[in-house]
Structure formats: C-alpha cells, structure tokens
Length: 458
Length: 145
Image 1: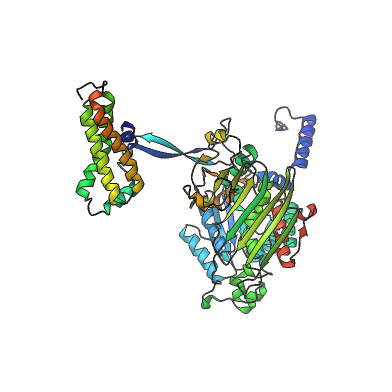
Image 2 (image 1 turned 135 degrees about the vertical axis):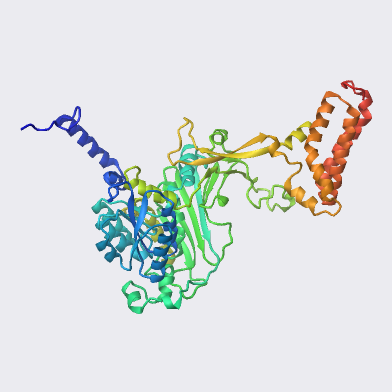
C-alpha cells in the first residue's frame, strides 16, 4: 500500500512550522482584541457553502428598517428570517422583503428563531437598547456574527457583557457607530487631521444635535400588544414600548440616542477617552419622560500635546443652532464634520501654514463661503476692535454615494469573509461608549466625574 | 471685451475620482472626491447668469422677442468686437458697437434695480466714449478709424 504524497507544501518542515507559529503568536499579542477576533473569523464563509451570507434581522422598528433597506443594496447577502415582538413591524418586514424577492421566516421571539434557523451566518440587532445585550449575547453564543445598533446597551454592565461574549465566542461583533466606516470621516481623521495636521493643536471640540419638539409616537389601537406580552418583554405599557428611548429601564435618553454618535467621534478623533466630565440637563419640557430632554456636557481630554476640552449639547426642544456636527478647533484651523455634507466645513486661521499641497491632493477644496456669512458686512456693525477677521472657508470634496449606514454594513460583511477588520468592534465601541454613560451620570448627579482608565476597558 | 466674450463660453464640470495620497496610492477607505474643472465650449454658452435672466423675464419692458436674440448673440458679438478692437479693424465701428451693448446692458440693469452693476457699466461706457474721442489718434489701426 502506498501512502499519498505529503501535502505540506514546499519548504515546510518542523523548524519553519515553529517559526511561523511563533510569529503568529507574537502578532496576536500586539493586535487589538477586535482585530484579533476579525483575524480569527477570516476562515468563515457563508454556511450555505457559497460566498452568500444568510442574515436575520431582530427588531424591525425605524432603525431596523433603515438597516434592512441598506442591506438590500449590498450583493451576496440575503435575509432569511426576521424577528419582532410586534406584529405590526413583523408583517411590515416580511412583506417588504417579499416585495424585494426574499421569502423570510417570521418570529416573535429571538430564542425561538435561534433554535430553528440553523443556516444563519449573522444577525442584525436593532431592538430597543435594553434588549441589545441579551439578544447579541445569545446570537454570539449560537455561533453567529452580530451587527448591533448603538448604544451597545442601556447599562454599562450590559455593554461589558457583550464584549466579554465576543471574546469568549470568537465571533465578530460590530457596533453601529456608522460614521467609523464613512469615507468622509475616515479622510477627515486620517488625511486632514493626522497627515496634514490641518487644525494644528486641537484645543477645543464642539458638537451638537438639536431637534425641535415632537409628539410622542403612537400606535394603531388594533395592533396594541397585550399586557402579558408587554410585561414579558419588559415594557409597562404601549406608550413605553413605542417611546422606549425616553425611559431609563429601556434606553439611555438623548445623550445615548443622538450624542452617542457624536461623542464617539470626539473619542475616535482625539484617540483617547476623556478624563473628566461635567454636565447639566433636565426634564425641561416633556413631563411624561424619564430621561432629560436637554443636556450640555463638557469633557476634558489629557492628550500628549496638552489638554483638549470638548463641549457637547443635545437639545430636543429647539432645532435652532446650525444643524448637527462635530467641530475640531485648533490653533491653525477647524475641521467641522457632519454626516450631512452641508454642515461640513474646514476653516483656516490666518497664521496657518500653506495648505496648497493638500488642496492639490484634493484632501480639501478652496473656497465656499459659509451659508449666511456676509463678507460685505458693514464694519460699523463690529462690536469690538479685537474681533478676529473672518476665517477662510474650505470644503471636504469627499462624497458618499450611498446611504450612511451602508459602508458600515459592508465592512461587517467583508470582515465575516475575512477581507477586512471591523471598523467598530465591540471593545473599541465600549471604550468610547463608557464616556457617554458617564455623561448621563454627570447630568443626573450634577457633579464632576473622573473617568479612570479601567472604566473604558471591558 | 474679448475675454468677457470668451467667459460666456466657460463652464465648470465636476468629475469623480479616487482620492490619492502624495505617492499616488488610493486612500484605504475607498474615498471618492468630486473635482471641479473650468472648461470652455459652445455647450457651456450662457449670455448672462440665469438669476439675471429670470429677473429680466419678469420685466414688462424687456419682452422675450427682444431678449432672446440678444442672449443668442451677446457672447459672439463681444468676441467679434474684442478681436476687431485688438487688431484695429474698423476701430470706430467696434467701439460704437461695444458702447451700444454696454448701454443695452445698463438699461436692463436699471430696470431690475442693480445699481452696482449700473455704476460698473457706466465706467465702461465712459472709457469707450474716451476711446472714441481719441480714436483719430489710433496708430495701431489696420483699417482707417
């Protein structure tokens, strides 16, 4: 009997094997946990045996529908199941996907779905925040990769458990801070700030998201959930179910809903979590909400080049104030980013070094006055001779020709296929979100809170 | 005059291209930039900005049967008169033509209340008038002034 020839490949002997193994081990030691998990998943392909990934969507509310729509624009992924406790959402999702050419199984309970759907590769979680951790942890333990909407959880313990489960299971867990995959933001950070040093030393950060007063969400009476179902899933009544973002046991309030995206950008761009936070806020308008409606937050960041202070405000009682943005203000310029390009601008201080090189590389484009700016303003209207001359405005020429969540989903699917590392793995998201939990705490306790390094490590 | 006419045929085109770093390497994010470029061509011909055309269209004293041929000819006339003036071909006639165009434009701007534009064109008309007065001393003329 003849043995088949060895399949080790050319040059593979015991010494080479040991060297390769040692090098791989050293590589793992210096990787971030999220990167490591992404590397571990590189061998993963769709369970169908093809390159196609089979997905389930848990939570078909407003955000779930946005993600569903975006997934439908991405090739080689298909929904096979949807899950929502509310028939109104579940029927919508099932019918919408049928119109898009996908017959999907519908479930009211995610555990039921996990027990029956054995061909899933990944799950997209867009439930109310307090269900993120239970659903995500169950999916990870079932061997599935998970894309979970931000905030990770309504409690820091819940968020921490998600990171730990990600590590234990070796599955991928992407958190839905979608700006992290937006090429406009990536160019602003990597090209404008890190390479070109457009702002100079960043001394101040300013961000906001203001929204006008709006009515609470209602529901068609014939679709009201029974008291038994509401209780089983942690809601007191239908009003809480539909307006969960405003209740402490379900969500994190406006600093979590809107601020999470933008405070995440503070932490990501500055490269470190803050060291202290003070804040003020309150239930100024809505008397039937538990979470405050308006909040103002000041963080302090200790960076190698010095202290940076960051102010963030979220108002839900007025939409005035110039839109939503994150503005990085330095000694030589300002980079104001927004998911909406119309609020994005770059300003040059008079003493800044020449930007010609960066303009020629198309990192930024010269000259478009800020809307409303009047260069012919009468000098008599100037109130103070010390007023600085108006800054020259520039634009960011990078465009995003797809919905804002799509690149983040594409990054998640590419990571599952081993073709990318996650742009926002759970451990990285936790590092950032820990500062958001602390801001809410500062509003509630009306005190200065010091963030210890271990607070941002799960 | 010549360049004022040429500018009537200018336009901006916007192209999308990958963002490259100083070494010509595409950005890792796959970023695409929009780059605007100024070009000239008959396809970009516009006699006066659309915002001004809209205002003229609302003026009862400027009927379309007068403005339409004016818009069609303005750019070509400015180039032809500018070339004639530069080469010294029929200089007096060219100056008269230019003066007439400026006067017509001034009337339009008076009707829509663009005082700054009126003053600007008024200076041009003064210069053209001075040139006409001095045209007998023009030594660069190919044809007789």
